[in-house]
Image 1 (cartoon, rainbow, N blue to C red):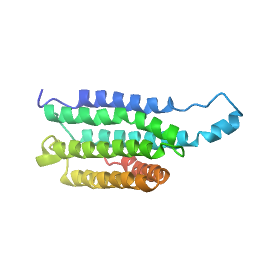
Image 2: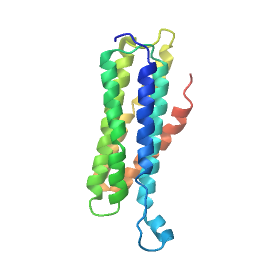
Image 3: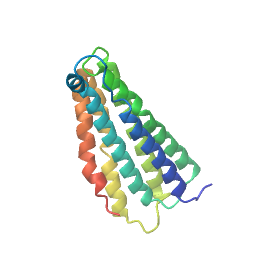
Image 4: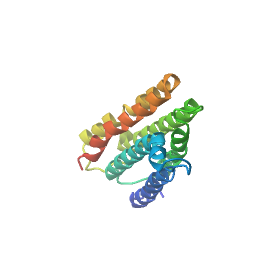
Length: 197
């Protein structure tokens, strides 16, 4: 299996990203009691959780797509690391649901801990994923310039510290932790969308 191209890896990964993003919307819903307008306003934590997680999954997908475009082959360890990355991505809808249901209610700190912890694990695994492929240009295509690799390095470097900060802030303010998470995702959207091919 060593030395295979990236087509099957990217196809399978794209499917997981699409499913995870789609599952997020299933958590949006209103109760049957009361005025519909007020019910729609009351579920603002669900909107916040949905938008934040959708942006995060979207940025992960954009970066994954760009990084795979720099890779010419895969090996078994890389496929395993990719599987772990997809495992964390597919899990994101669960803590998103917790945040949607418990933010600004009893239990919000535990919900946000689960959310921030999941994102921190994702950032760690994603960093390992890239470092493995990039190390000694192990899986990198020959025609890829070192400057392109350094650009990806710069994009990955803040990830783990940023999500560690999100987890730390959750001890003080769960709502602030989620808002910072949204800001991190929004910060990464332009750079992820404008990668040079």
